[in-house]
Length: 370
Image (cartoon, rainbow, N blue to C red; front, side, top):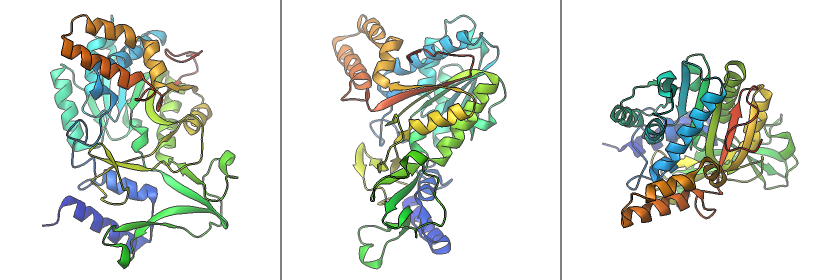
């Protein structure tokens, strides 16, 4: 019987035969999110035995500091009870478990929060439920952030936006064309089942940021419609009902040209078209576009700032020293290594950015310059 990857590859070939070449976004959507054979539907991709490791899995300090950030924001917005505490793409639930532990002694906070997890993967939902059960908490799970009940909200998204499907556009001598995914020609099929092609020049301009439309021939521009929609939903809610969001991801602070689509398998880079459903497909987040959406929705945008600077502002060095004081020599080496990986420029400290969104009543957020 064919494996899941074989089923997904056949499904994609059949879609292309029916519909013609797919947008990169459509290809990514099926590769990652197909309900039976997609990447996230079939596995827990995190950790040493998976394909990648996120900051909460590297050190408990990350989730602890994010949790305390949320508690400070709750205090700043008047300690509403209840407040919706929302996490997008919660992974194994590690960040939230660490955040809950760190904030357990903040007077009134834990009693006020209602936990909401935005997760479509059944595999990861199960892991999150196990993690939160061990932490003594329950949550509500939703497919989309728009399903979260009304009220003031505090939103956390760590390595969520980078996995959303993107569209890619290439500037040619004939104008902007969209990059599409087609079935490979017979001579190419030994190595790849799929290939990139370009659409004909469009009759109307694609949704490319105006400041990038005069890019030179050969330039690639990426647009992430889902990211813009989700951020608009969050920003509109925060502008109307109060609260704040913190978004941590890798990307560029301003909209820029460049092909950033990448695939990872077993902690190593791979060919993005080689094995759909078996690879983690991501692209760099356009924080400039997110900032424009937040402002357009009536919210305040903060940053982005580097992850290293943000965590140092929140006190990761002091927290490190506290953990070291009761650590064995081997544990101490692990704590120092984890801290360096999170904050140093040659680790995650510079590549990863932290972006904040708040309701108009919050002129400043912890960790961001006023």
